[in-house]
Length: 63
Image 1 (cartoon, helix red, strand yellow):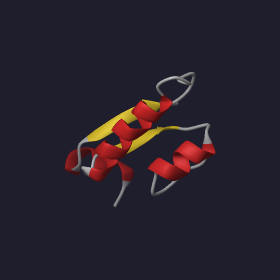
Image 2: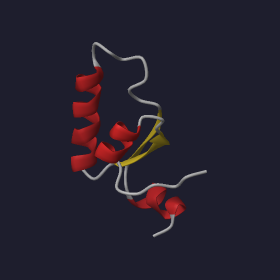
Image 3: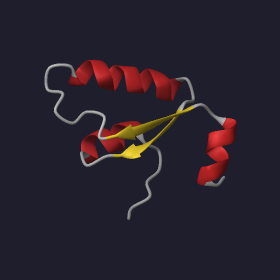
């Protein structure tokens, strides 16, 4: 399945470092993103934190 086809099949969220500078509410954001992932929402984003990326993403495109 190509990346572009995901946008027509699944709901998706575009994320830009979703947990950056969120020390106090990081866990809340992670739980929210996990819920979206469980509901088959595609998470497309930029992740500089490898731990977060590995927890949330099934695949990776590295530039």
